[in-house]
Amino acid sequence: MQRRGYLACLASYHLGDYLKPVGAWAPKVVHQAMEKELGAPFVALQRMAAAMKHSESTDPRTGVVLMQSGSDTVRPPTGFGSGTFGGSMNPGDGNPGNPMRWGDGGGGRYVEDDGQFFDMLDLCVIALRGYAKLYPGELSGSAIESLHYNPSAYQR
Image (cartoon, rainbow, N blue to C red; front, side, top):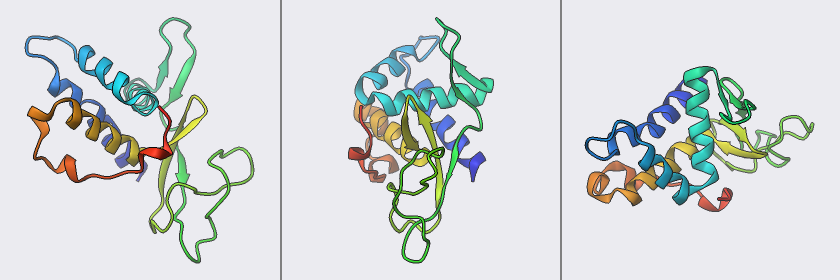
C-alpha cells in the first residue's frame, strides 16, 4: 500500500511534465500555475515527489528538510466495529483517529506537511482535478473528471 501511494503521487505530480508548453525544458510554468490554483495540497504533493526521488525534500535556500521519503503514517480503516473513528491526525499526540474517511473499510496513508495532514490518495485526486481544470483541452473527457474528494478537508 505504501509503495503504491508514493507511486500514485509521483505520477500525479509529474503529469505536469506532459502538460508543459511545447519547447519548454521543464514544467516550471505548469507547477507554478498548479501551486497558485491549489495551494497547500499541491505543495505537499510536490514535496512528496521530491522526497521520493531524493530521499528527502529540502528548502533550497535554508537546507531545512521539508519532507522525508517514508515519513507517511498509516490511516487505519474506519467504520462500525473498527474502533478507530475520531481523535486527531497527529500521530504523536496519543489520540489516533481518522476524521477523514468514515466507512472506507481499507484504510490508507497520510503525510504531514507544514502541520497539515493530507491523505495520499486525496493529494493525487486534487492534483489530477487541478490539472484537468487548468488544462481542459488536454484532459477534458478523461476519467479524471469522475474522481472525487472532499475539498473542504484541506486549506489552501
